[in-house]
Image (cartoon, rainbow, N blue to C red; front, side, top):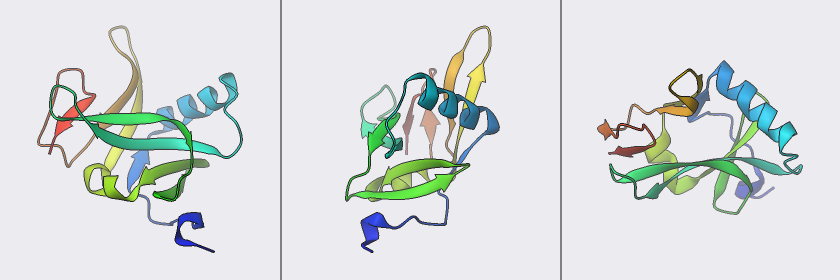
Amino acid sequence: MTEANQTTANQPLVLSEGAVEAIKNILIEQDIPDGYGLRVGVKGGGCSGFSYVLGFDERTEKDDVFEIEGINVLIEKVHFMYLAGMEIDWVDGLENRGFSFNNPSAKSTCGCGSSFEV
């Protein structure tokens, strides 16, 4: 088995109970194909320097796969340093609805909470 095909036991991030429920609902409602996983990553941009990437995708040779609460989470190896220890939560309030990111590696975040600086 190649390294890209292995599932790593150590989990670099946490999905809250609300996030797990929301992700599983999205998988069903949007009929995400088998073999796809939840891609969590970062990209340059946003008002604080980096933005989070969250969506469903197929695994690539650059990814490590982590099973978290029955969900295959895909993270490119180069993104670990930005995501280690992060918690993804689901917020369903009057003023805000969606995923939120609590990242202990972030020096600062923007007002919307979807971008950060390290």
